[in-house]
Image 1 (cartoon, one colour):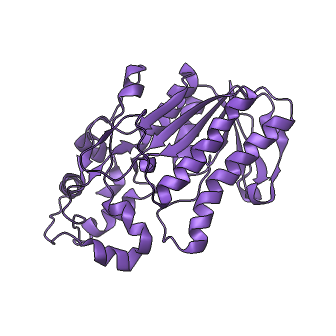
Image 2: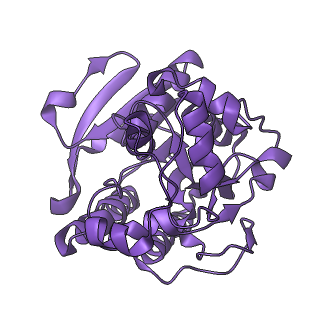
Length: 303
């Protein structure tokens, strides 16, 4: 099998590529940087420029599945211009894939796209399943909704679709998690607000394995990419501190203070989404890291 991956050089993409090669799956990937091109037999890069609608269509040759991970990080201050980049990096790039496949002969039968649990509203009480109809009306919710809408359009050209709604990714190699670890390591760790907000997390290994599982089992529809055991921000903060042999001595950080520091992005730290991964488990997926202590112990670079 051969897959095409967008965002293959990013945090999640690199782990998926590693697992693909372990399973003898060849990888084509798209990049905007000529410096990131590789032409090894099982890992071949092609250039694209979503903003200008440019793509090397050779990337689709013999490809059966597209794994779509492209998107600018949300863990950066949300200026007006950067909010536009967050949206366009997802929607415009996905639409370019769609429009290109409409116009060429290809062998693509399945698109497996990243999404985010930010589509669900902030709630301390709700337990969100994949078929939950509630939608967040804030910026992130709108971004995810527009992103998923374009993914769904692949069905109009007879391509199956899967959407993987990703929670907080635990990795010591990048993403938001090292930013949570840093103040704790320096002795300035604290919960956000009262710490009661739910944080639905997933270990990077399980996330990559889930993408590959969906590809190999040819699963379609929506899947929540979170561990079976969501926890509160307070419990997560104290679990990280325990794994690092540190103590949490500071009071909770008030929301207004983080709003002053981070602007609108502060909502990432205070929003509460308790999300269920029952559907992927019922499909036969087994989590390697299903509890927070085990997951944190595996992340060597946080200690």
